[in-house]
Image (cartoon, rainbow, N blue to C red):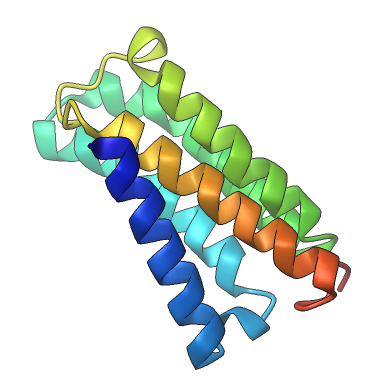
Length: 133
């Protein structure tokens, strides 16, 4: 069920962003990536686990940097970051112990990330938004 909700929500938000015009700005998907990257850190802070936050800070920083570099250079980097975060989600529990992360989060978020990456890739193949700044 988590995967189905993640897929549905990613499609709904991506389509809404397309209809409203949010995703016509190069910054939309990089900002989405930054928000996505911050959730595990938020869960660690909510649980009060400094150790989990420190562990989460490494991948969080990497994905945020990918979003920034992708925004400045080429949005295909953001596609890779979103897809990579989706894969990271499916392995998260085996890599980092975060007591604040809901048990359903990795599968939900992984599905969301991969669908969002696919939607951005579709837009880039159509030439909107432009892949390169």
